[in-house]
Image 1 (cartoon, rainbow, N blue to C red):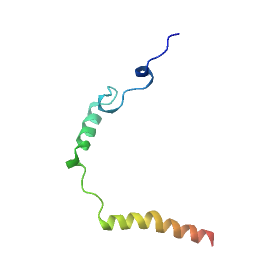
Image 2: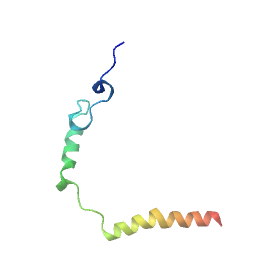
Image 3: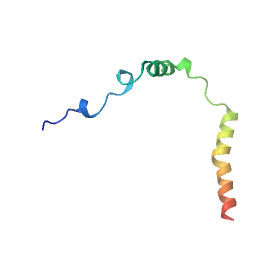
Image 4: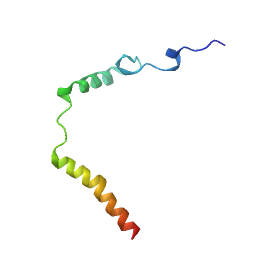
Length: 66
């Protein structure tokens, strides 16, 4: 039984993968352009993320503990 090469074991990754549908490849290529990624989070967004991700769970843990 012959050994398999790395290319046979590990599939190609990235945009050169022939298994990706053409539409998915086009979407990935479109999103890789920094102009199409949109703006970052604002201060209000970070406040909501921090509040919902840290403060609310901490309060729920304390409430359940008491």
